[in-house]
Length: 272
Image 1 (cartoon, rainbow, N blue to C red):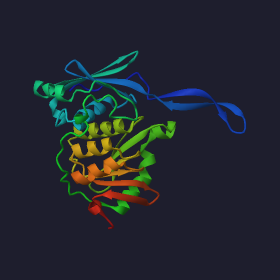
Image 2: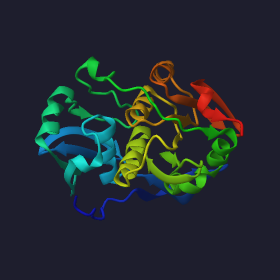
Image 3: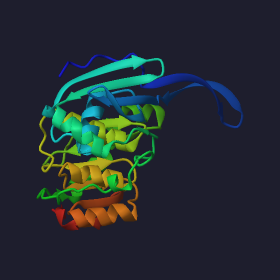
Image 4: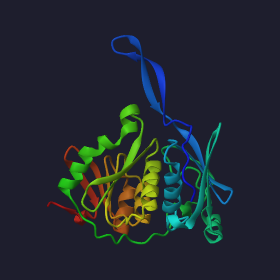
């Protein structure tokens, strides 16, 4: 794959605003950018997502993996990123065998920041076949909450704008070793997975933390990669809990301030 090139599109924008504190005063603020990102395979448009314009190679690789388009990052022959006035296009070249399977999962969706289902053409695509999670990774409660307390240090864009989600990877010892941010929660997760995949990370040895609710899509992407533990700072949905239970994923919600709720397969969490 080609070496990534720096993007001209910024990840945040500085603005003059009228701030109210008992009266209006002019001040400066920073807001996160949200840019249309088109992903193409072998020259054919596949999906357009609204995302933060950073780590786009990671984003495209992670999306390709979690959507089941490829099985590992080495199956991508080339990635090219092109900027236009209307957005950014990420072009991936994959082998013809994988490209032919795209006809079975074609989405051609106009993505939205908060919804990974918008535009899906066939309902059967929502619940694609997945293997049960076989990870034997465990995580101590102490390590879980130590990592949660450490999250803000890895969220520079959130600290500047207050508008982004993040996804974090804990290694087998419970330490944060990677983080990605984006205005979309599922985009942040895809970026993280893509970055880890390029380093040939063993997804069965570690845990995933997210600063959002645990929707079905976040659970599905985790299962697709064989991740054993998913920890969310907010609530899961009922569908996400059923999916986690069915496919043997440890699902934790409301992990904050030293508390958490285990919704599925708590056996991977230890008290030592």
